[in-house]
Image (cartoon, rainbow, N blue to C red; front, side, top):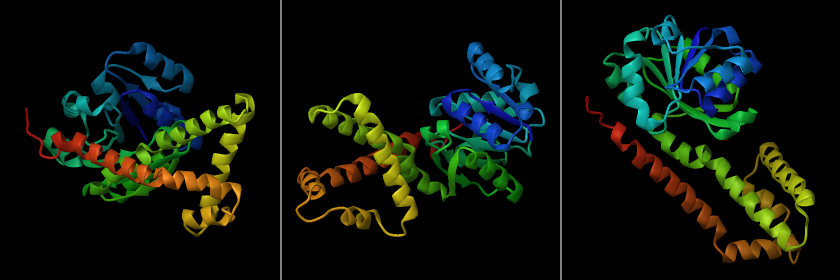
Length: 275
């Protein structure tokens, strides 16, 4: 299944790597291009055995899937460049935050099957939490192809397109929130006298273990927390400080604001005007 990546950044590479490793795509069926960084294309070609080229017509000819992995600000330019070479039967997958399927349809000037996706940076290690939304032209076969592609880099869920801003705020930006917690734990370890070499693996395993417990449990996170918070114990003493500092509400506000920012960034693409 010929698949063409327009843009060759870290997310495109994560998808290429995951798709090849899982068998979702064969290296010989993958084509990639970018605006001008030929060195980057050669790097991907050497690493994965894919095809790279600046011949737009050649890489898009008979392409079953076209992945738009460029920045949202470059959306109109990228679509203008590839539009004349797109096959009407191609599936367009967009990774551009805030860029609506309707915008892509209107820029193309014709009906296309479009899947809008919001993966996160954990795709680089095959652990992305990805949500996808489908427009009305996506066939069952194309839906399955998109699910196979994104499942090769982690967990995938189908959502309504209007929910993607919330997904962006929650899981799209989510890894950064966890890194923020890890930063705090690293600083605390130093403050209480633990060397970095000792603290880092303990922090990592604590995060991994907690994630596994959440995955294995049918209950809420609150129940797991209460289960390890003994009256008068060390955990209770620590949680008391978090509650006094309103840390939980800060995280809620953080995700709500990230969601609002995603909506603001998407405003130029809600009611597109041809230029």
